[in-house]
Each structure stands twice: as C-alpha cells, then as structure tokens.
Image (cartoon, rainbow, N blue to C red):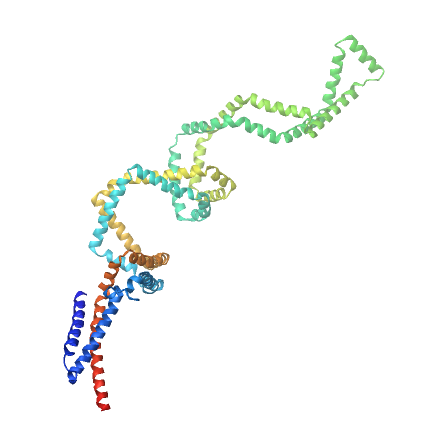
Length: 515
C-alpha cells in the first residue's frame, strides 16, 4: 500500500508543480492556457480525493472538520454493520445449510482412509491414547470417575419399565434362544455332576432356618384361617356319630346311673324310690341327655364367640407351640426322607424338562407373567436401590476386568496393529454399507449445530473487532483496501486533469464564438 500511496502523492505533487509553473507564463498562449486549466483541475481533484480518503481514517491536517475521521467516529456502527453482514448475508443460515448439504462426509472419510499418512497419524493417536487410557484405568481417579459416571447413569434408569417394555420382544428373539441353549447346557452339566447326598444336605440346610422360623406361624395362620370351617365340620361329625350311636350312648348313660346308684346306700334308696314312683325314667333321661348334648354342639357350631369354641381354638394354638420342636424335627425328617428317596427322580425330572422343546417358551411365558405382575413391581420397588447397586458394581468390575485381562493384548505392537486394522476395516465397510445414513446423520448434526450456534458468528466477529485498537482496525482496513483507496486519489488527479482539459477547450471555443 505504501508504494501506491507514494505514487498518489507524486501525482498530486506533480499536479501542483505543473500548476504553479505554468501560471508563471502568459495565459494568452492557447497551449499554456489548456495546461493551466488541466493542472488546476488535477490539483483540485487530487486534493479532494486526498481529503476524502484521509477523512476516512483521521482528521485531515489535524483539523477537526465535521464528518472527518469517519471510521473512528462510527466505529461501533461499522462493527455492528460488518457483524450483521457476515452473519445475515455472507454466512447466513440458509447459505451455510446449502453448503453443508453439498458436503459429502462419507467421501471425505473414505478419501482420507486411503492416504497412508492419515492412517499412520490416526494409528499413532489411537496407540497414544489407548496407552494413556489403560494407564489411567489403574488409578483411583479412574475408579472414582467410572463409579460416578455409571452410578449417575444407572440410577436414572427404570429397569423394571425397560425390561417390561422389551421382555416380549426379547423372549421371541434369537438372543433369548441362544441364551437358553447356553444356560440349559450348563444346567444339565451341573445336574448330572451334582452329588445326590450333597444336594439333599444343601436342600435341608437351605430349608432348615425357614422351617424353624416359619413352621409355627404358618400352622397358626392356617389354624386361624380355617378354624371356623374345621370346628363346624367337627361339630357336624360329632352329631353324626351321636345319631349313629344313640343306642350305645343311651346304654352307657343307663349303666352310669346304675353305677352311680351302687356307690352309696342313700343314693341307691333315693334313685330306687324315684324309679318306683315313676319320677325318674333312666331311658328317657338318657335320651334327654343326648339331646342336650346335641343342642350344646349345635350352639358351639353356630356361635363363633362361644366360650367352649374359643377354648378349643386357644388350646389348639397352644399345642402348636408346645409341640413345635417335635413338629420341626418331624417335618425336616420327612422332607429329608422324601428327598433321599426321590433325588434321582427329581434330577431326571429336571433333565427331562430341560430337553423338552417347549420348556424355553414355557419359561418365557412364566417370566412374562411374573414381570407384568404386581408382585414383580413391588419386588422391584422394594429392592430398586440394591438392584441398581448390583448392576453398577458388575459393570464396573467387568470394565476393570476387561482392561486388566486385555492390557497386554491391546498394547503389544503386533496385536495392536491387528486390532487397529480390524476396527479400521470394519468401520470402512460399515460406512460403505450405510453411506446414505452416515451422510444424512452428519449433515443433520452439522446443520443442527450450525443453527444452534449461528448467533456466535456475528458475536465472534463483533468481539474480534471490538478487541482491536483503533490503529489495528485502521491497519486491517488499509491492508485490505488501502491500494484501492490510493488508486482513487490517482484517478482523481487524472480525471481532474482530463476534465480541466475539456473545460479549457470548451472555454476557448465559447470565447472564439462570442468574438
């Protein structure tokens, strides 16, 4: 720009020198007159354009003339205008969206993947960060970060809803079939190699505490829940027995009266006299006693608050706790005996069920029912925290275990080259197979990011220009358009001289015409 500025100054200086020099001559000479007018116009044009160009950047000659030093006085307007032009016109959302849509992301990636230097650079970066990640995986900071990240992610999930919503599709998928095959093979192997004696001992040990703590409450609850029916059935049965054995009972009562009479002479005399005067009839008395007994039994049956009925209930419950040790031992021995006698049958039953082709679908059906039941939902709600802790801990342990087991495999040069090539080829093949999806995804994401952050373009331009000092801003403008501005000055002198020449010719023509 400095060279063009010097040329512009020389043009102006030359115009001034010619102007002064030719005004020393007599203007009666036509040629002198024309040169005077041309140099005069060139000086005016050169000065005018010098003033205009200078007024953009400063006060010409240091004089604070209005509408000079335009850039500094209108700095903020200029910055806002430039930022708006860049944001809304040159790099508008519509323009950028069109440019993004014209990009071929997959072609770019595929072209880069064919260049050895890019692959080598990518491999170097991958190895560098793989080594760093593995080293980092052995630090407490990694453990803390991994736990925090997984816990935060896991605790946001509702595993019951996830499993419930996907269970039906899962049970119909090949993944479920493969999982069932693998688990059934392991189960069969385990059952076939399971020691029968140990199985019985394990079952007894497992049931021991449950039977010991739950036997009495279970029996008590069973008695309380079924006592009314039991006592009613018992009363009906007793009445039935009385009716069936009425004669026997009657004879027994008569014999009882005779035995009572023979116990003392006074009793014998009284009862004999009563019988003699027909005041007492042993047969009628026995029948009456039987009817009274039946009425009592009927009352016990119908009245749930009858004292005898309540006494029977309390007695039965007390006997449960009295005989609890014996009942516990008896039940445990019975279970052990049944298991020992049938352990082979039980094993064969399970093996048969595993081999049954319908078992997998039966299990899927039962699991699906269980998952959709209130029982499963209640269980999940009660144990949600424990379930999530269990899942989180297992994921963390799996990641650490994987890193530990595969450290040498990953970091060893030959293995790293092998795995890198495999992953690289896999990604390229997937890209070729899903080119359209990849391009659409990248374009959508780039367009979304552009639209979400488009305001930053104008903001960045504005911040950059605001951070520039006035001298820096002037330098930036002059470095870009300074030469063109100096050409304006040069053109001003040239055009001025041409206009002056034309004016001089026209002036001479008019003078000659008027003569």
